[in-house]
Image 1 (tube, rainbow, N blue to C red):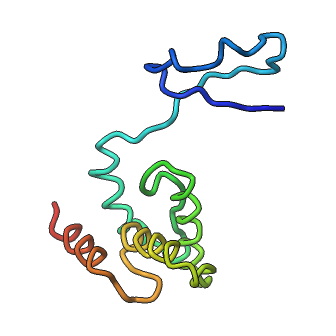
Image 2 (image 1 turned 30 degrees about the vertical axis):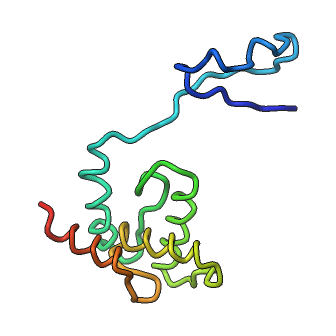
Length: 131
């Protein structure tokens, strides 16, 4: 069993789909990758941190909280669990801690350990002065 994705139809001349024997294809499905529009980044992402504070037992998680990626979806789930009292499980990995803290700052308005980097403080400042 083999699965492949042929991306970017504008460059379909580089695809190898025509080399695949059609009799061997079990299923073919065409889809379009979901992508956020600029309004998502202007209205949803900056305001989500305030929705997170409405109810102390309900937190929003998923790729929609920032960029539509698997990584953000996973991080946001860990962040929601953290806000409900769970410990962050990857403290020894500097890169994951940095990504988690940035996500926590952007989506929840706080950080795992209460400490904020310059970039996190700047992000918080900008989000408080923007209309």
